[in-house]
Every structure is written in structure tokens, then in C-alpha cells.
Length: 338
Image 1 (spheres, helix red, strand yellow):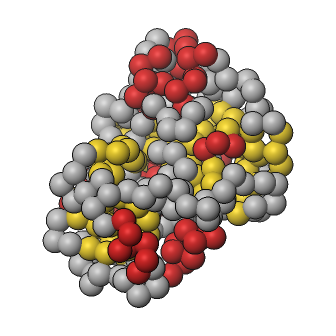
Image 2 (spheres, one colour):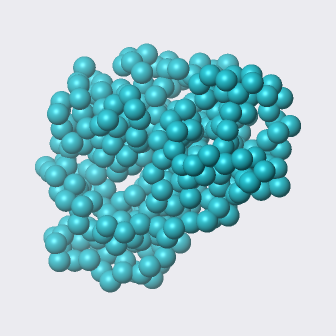
């Protein structure tokens, strides 16, 4: 991780007032409205196809704060978890920018610009509880002008001091503006105008306008292997659960490479690769038997005839011999993005 000198010039007041503890949300943090640029204010917000369709078991994912471990526990059986298929669109992690296109009661229809889709040039669309979003121009300025901390651990804790009590567990790939650094911790800004500390070992710091170093295939494989055993979650893009394309999207994003959110769209990126030429990091796509029709699944080749993927609601992120796994002959091609 690149160590940076403390950043105190632009946001000195915020740093001085909150060092060692979180601050209460200031008036700069507001309930957003239609047309606003807003930010995700919970560990992970989940995008639904329609508002007010969630079940009682989904309640822990709809609040502020969320309790995603409880949500996962509520969906221990495959039928309960599989019910989400087709009812969720995607997710976005703490601090992600969104655009609000409509408000209906306690729900907001948003698009997520960092997740590309041909369905909407503005970003990936869906409905979220409006209480999970904030409109905050100060935070927007911090995002644009300060270095960012990108979480590289599968999960990390925000704390009230460098060695303090845990405030909120956050996901891999969360990015937050850095106010100052010490050898052990990063002082970060949060969307609600409060601040917290993040262990330096759990994140990389990137200067404004910069990102991670260009990866090779084995870098991508090592990142993917962090999540072996993590239970599948339809629409998931966080360390609390992935779907197949959310998994590959997130691995590439962690290394500064933007690919579309969905498997069918990922299949249109990069360059074609023959099976005989597969390399670690290549994406493998699957459609209907015979490899025909629309792509519905993606995995990442890791070498030696194996791929890592998030298969379905009954299983977890796993490594398989991809040719043996493809018992219905659904393989439809491979792409190289690097």
C-alpha cells in the first residue's frame, strides 16, 4: 500500500473535529430526492426490480444500518434464497455514487454509474430503500479531490479510533476518501458526514485519479480465491454474497478494470480465446445446451483445466474442472480482458 502524508488542507475542520471518534451527521448529509446525485449510506444496498416486494426474511437488508449476516442466516435453505432470482437487480457498496431517477414512498429508483449495462447508459438500475442513501455535496467533493482507500480484505471494520471499537463491517471493494494516515490506520470520510478509522492492512490507498497496478492473470486468481466457500447470492456484488457475474465483475474491479455487470454483456467484451490457449484470468461463458442462445453463466479460468465461479443458490464460490462441470455442453466461448 502506498503511504500518503496526512491530508489536512481542504478538510481540516472535519479532521480536527473528529480525530479519534466518529462525528454525528452534519446538515450537509440530507435525505435525497428525485434527480439527486446520492451515495450509498449502508454496508451494501440491494437493488430490487420493484419496490415493496421484499419478504419478512429480507428485512435485515432493508434497514439502515443493514445486518447482512442475519439476512444470509435467514436464507439458509436453497428455496428461500432461490426466491430472490429475478426479483433483485444488483447491489452497491458503501460510498458508491448513484443517481436517483424516481422516488415512490420509502423507495428510490436509482442507477449505479460504476456498473455498466446496455439497458441504461447511465448505469445499472433498480429500487432501494431511500433511507439507505444520502445526498452530501461535501462527501462528493472529498471523493473527487482526496486519495481513496479501497478495501482489499474480504471484509473490514470501521472503528471509532485507530485501535478502537468496531462501528460497521464493510465489504471488499468499498472505496472511501482518506482524510489522513498513520502507520496502522486510515482516517476515512463517510457518506453521512461522519468519519471512521480503517486498518491499513485492510485497504490500499490510491492518489486522486490513480488506481491499482495493472494485474496479471494470477493476481485475479488470488483475489477470487479469497471468497472460496462464500454462499451464492443472486445479484450479489459484495463479500456478503456474489452471483456469477457479480463475482467476476468484482474481481476485475478490484484491479482497476471495468467490465459490464452481467454475464451476457461481459461476453461481448475483450477478445475471443480458443480453449487450447486459455490463460489464468480468462472468462468462460455458458448458454443453453450446445452453447446456443443468451449467455447465462460466467466463470474465471485459473489454469490446469479449472475455473472459479459462483454457481447457484444451492452452492458457494468454488473451483471445478470446468469441462467436467459443463455436463450439458453449455460452453459458448471464452474472452480475455487483460
